[in-house]
Image (cartoon, rainbow, N blue to C red; front, side):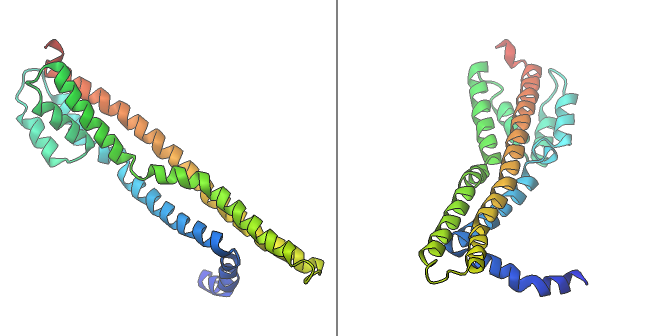
Length: 213
């Protein structure tokens, strides 16, 4: 059986799985959709080549103390990125006292890191509340089942109702686990990028002789 045929054959039961979950299942489905969008967006943005472009790294490595900064400026303009913007801030404040120039660079770096972390708080919150929403959905379903157990005393019906009520817990955990993995991965990636960003900036600052002022 081909996949389209398999999907068509099982689509009704698949939809029923979510429909029977009620309000809390709907909330979990919405959270999963938004979480997937955030994960895809962050995966495209938080990459080494986009944050630390190789041409920028090569230009900083090739720069010699006392040389003209025009080449650096052209490369930074041609390769827009968080690193380019931080180093551009450094070049713009190269004639300032070292402490003031450092403050300006750190402010820009914090801004860029904040932009990279945008959306991660949503993953963190979703990771925490998804299992709780799943549990609420399950408890809500169980309350309804036991409230009507006198009307439907058939053990098979009760067992089926409990099984369906547990669907919310399954989906809640299913949403939380990938979000937790993605959040920890992106957080660690931002930490590594922050260290590299600081190291490269310090290297260029030393070549510009700001450390002697």
